[in-house]
Amino acid sequence: MSDPVNQKHTDIVVIGAGPAGLATAIAARTAGFKVLLADHAIPPIDKACGEGIMPDGLAALAALGVTVPAEKAYPFRGIRFVEGTTSVDAVFPKGVGYGVRRTVLHDLLTQKATEVGVEMRWGAHVSEIASNQVTIDGLPVSCQWIVGADGQASIVRQKIGIGRSHSEQRRFGFRQHYAVRPWTDCVEVYWSDQGQVYVTPVAQNEVCVALITADPHFRLNEIPSAFPELASRLAGALESTRPQGAITMTRRLDSVFEGNVALVGEASGSVDAITGEGMSLGFQQALSLVNAMRSGSLQPYDEAHREIGKNPRRMAKLMLMLGERPWLRHRALRALSSQPDLFAQMLSVHVGESRVRDFGIERALSFGWSMLTA
Image 1: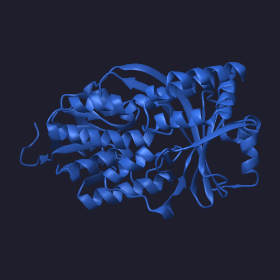
Image 2: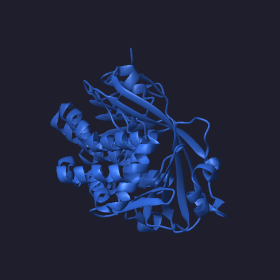
Image 3: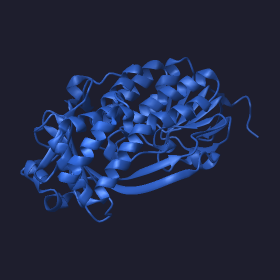
Image 4: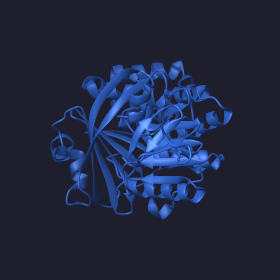
């Protein structure tokens, strides 16, 4: 048995200090909870991701009291789809998104966590997890709430037995930065039969190039063969970072809590990275989770979590379907390029400014007819 005299007490233990874990710790501490945050890694923590934050994600960051300085980011006004000579773009109905290097974002979140008084344990080893106690570096820590923010292979989820997975789909993601001046103020998504590449401007002289593919053997150096239109943009540009790889997972859990233990971020399920909503979802989940903790029950968080992920899951399903069916993708992109207002409406739904029902039967029929005649 542990020695009660030497046992540490806190209100909340957050396991995992990526963006979702840091956001949860910040929100909880700001709400008056005493928070201990633990991660086995040591900053700066990087990860292969597209590095774009949508307007809804920036709004959630602002609610956390985190502002991304303009000089550390690059604004983008919307999204552009490109395949061959076909392209269509739309601007966000409100605000802009930001391209931000992952290390810069992590540093900003860490600084905010320090400012509000979160206790952080870097390079920490978590050996035991129970409903009201976590053992960190051999020291038992008793707590009221435990949060698993420890990624796709969440140890918290496995040890507590939270949620059954109802759907899973894996793809492979690779990311690299190029020293080149951004040629657009949109995030561009390039399509081919090999997958998608999305390009996010992150600085005045740098872009982030992220490849997502179902082919485990396809790599960034093969972009010229599958995405010649993008290769022409990158011709002569110097690689400013080394390639990084990761698994991108589509996973939905039937529950994101058990008792007083909750999951956030990719530990709680995820949508394919092609939606660009990964970090935005984590920030919104963090705010909802802390609101539920303040009420004394995690059930409202479970319900809010499903609602937060509803539109991104729909968009992920649609985009994955287009990726898997070339004939459908060709017709859809040609139809959208001839009626760009439809693409704008879809983007508005995706970022939460409109509802699916606002799309309307007339617009749906118009889009269907355009596809048939494309």
